[in-house]
Length: 166
Image 1 (cartoon, rainbow, N blue to C red):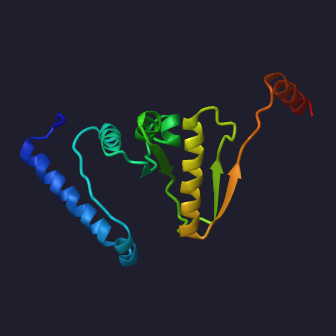
Image 2: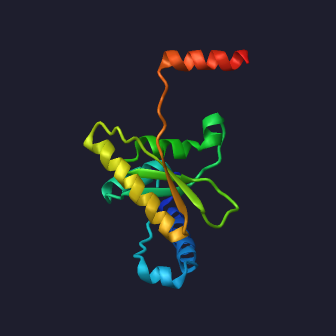
Image 3: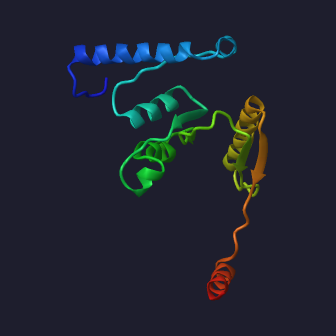
């Protein structure tokens, strides 16, 4: 068990409270969705990002989905320090969702690299496209598949200099 700042009895009560919160959250999911999807709740104790990374690796998860954290510095303002750690160290794909007022998605973009130089890159491209199209089916959204060609460094500098002169 992870080290904790709380005595065992308080830690267990906090864990039960979080389990009840999850029960309420799960109860709010549409009943037809609940019948189609297997939902299992997990409450860990320890450093949040470490516990998520361990659980993702131990249970062979394919995807971790999380709402973006708010935090301090510039990077943390963009993603949050927990989010950055998940993106760097998690063994599976990580999707960080920015809190939004929108209730649904209309257009999705999958940024892929068709020059996949390894089977792992090719598999990631396929997984990304499968996830994007799966979400688009649920949301009745359009999918755009995007790849950006990088300009050679010399040409990019020349273009940038010319654009600054104008």
